[in-house]
Amino acid sequence: MRIRLADLQDALIIAEMSRNLIEVGLGWSWKEQRVLRSITDQDASVAVACEADRVIGFAIAKYRREEAHILLLAVDQASRRRGVGTMLVRWIEKTALIAGIGIVYLEARLNNVGARAFYDALGYREFRTEPGRYRGLESGVCLGKDLWLERQ
Ligand SMILES: CC(C)(COP(=O)(O)OP(=O)(O)OC[C@H]1O[C@@H](n2cnc3c(N)ncnc32)[C@H](O)[C@@H]1OP(=O)(O)O)[C@@H](O)C(=O)NCCC(=O)NCCS
Image 1 (cartoon, rainbow, N blue to C red):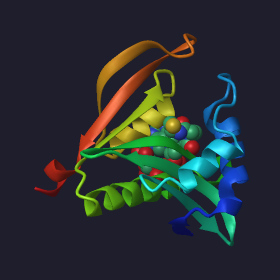
Image 2 (image 1 turned 30 degrees about the vertical axis):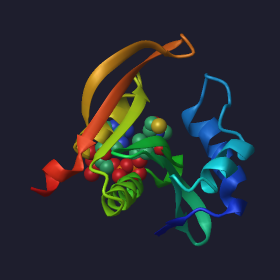
Image 3 (image 1 turned 90 degrees about the vertical axis):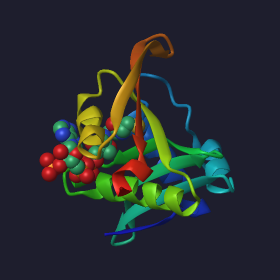
Image 4 (image 1 turned 45 degrees about the horizontal axis):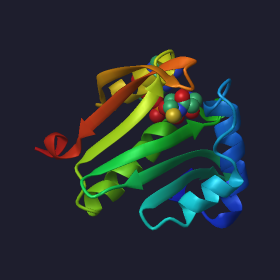
């Protein structure tokens, strides 16, 4: 398994994974064109985890002046609990640090117990709940991590 930067040909599979694994029940907002915009955005990174040339996971992060936001992250069902998600998040964290960014934020659905446990295991702390965050249908939770603190 290896992590690499996504190329343009990965956009459709990433969009489909977002629809099937992340946006379930909320409508499909991360279609191919939107993923392509992230792949070509110089302030964003799209990473894919590949096994034998097959994409088994991906992460999209946006970098701002002092913080990075993980916008999307998913690993296909058959490849979970093998450390793939951890490797993708570590990759994002490393790129943030290289860019001089020490804070990483993200949001998750409040009822996404698995993802919340995953981020907790990686040192992300929940600091705010946002009622109705997802189209008024579901609440969200905001999480963050101070990467500098972890390095001390
Ligand atoms: C969340 C997700 C990315 C985790 O990917 P993964 O490759 O399975 O994660 P890892 O194997 O690196 O897990 C690392 C640790 O996180 C915790 N963890 C991961 N998934 C968990 C779950 N479903 N329940 C409880 N703890 C979990 C465990 O401590 C795990 O270590 P362990 O397997 O040794 O117990 C994956 O479940 C997923 O794609 N979910 C659907 C999409 C999603 O929710 N994305 C995040 C919000 S955008």
